[in-house]
Image (cartoon, rainbow, N blue to C red; front, side):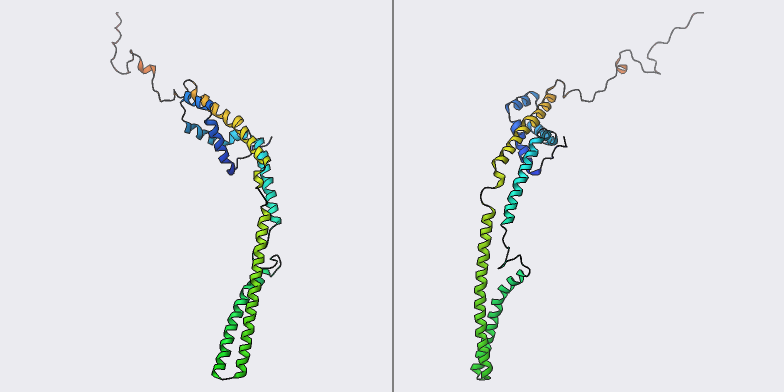
Length: 252
C-alpha cells in the first residue's frame, strides 16, 4: 500500500467540520467532562493530527479526489469545445484577424475626418470664388469620404453585434446545466469519505487522547521535587564539626 494522500487545501474545511461534529457528540462531551480537558485544546490536537487521522480513510479520499478531477476535466473539455473568438469581427483563429479588427474601428474615423477636411476646403474655395475646378474636386472627394465613413461604420457595428451574439451562444453551450461537481456519484463519494474519516480516523484519535488525559495521575508527578534522605535524618551531623562527643581514651 502506498503512502497516504495529503489532504488538499480545499478539503480542510470539510475536515474541520467533521472534527467539530465528532467533538460535539455525546460520547466525546461526556469524556471531556470526566477528564477536564478543554474543548479548544482537544480541537487543536485534532487539527494538528490531520495526517494521522486522514490516513484511516485514505481509500475513500483517493476515490473522492479521483472522481472530482475527472468531473472537472470533463467540464473543462466541454467549455473548450465551444470556445468562441475573444474579440473583433470575423474568424480570430486566422493570422492577421487582429489587423482587420483595428481597421474596422479606424476606417470610419479616418474617413469621417477626411470628409470633413475636404468639404471645408472645397466649400471654402467656392465661397472665395478661387480655383473652381479644385473646389469641385475637393467637394466631390469630401462627399465620397463621408459615404465611405458611413458604410464602414455600419459594417463595423454589424460585425461587433455578430461577435457578441456568438460569444453569448458559446457561453450558453459551455454551461448547459448544473455543474459536474454536483453529480450524485461525486456527492456520494464525498459523504463516504467523511463518514470513514469521522468513524475510523477522528473518533479513535480523540478517544485515545481523552483516555490518556483521564488516566489516574496522568497530569501529576511532573513537578520539580528535591529531597534526599541523607540530608533529612535527625542524627545527621555535618563533617568537621563537633556535633558529637569524642571517643573515651583507652585505659592502660
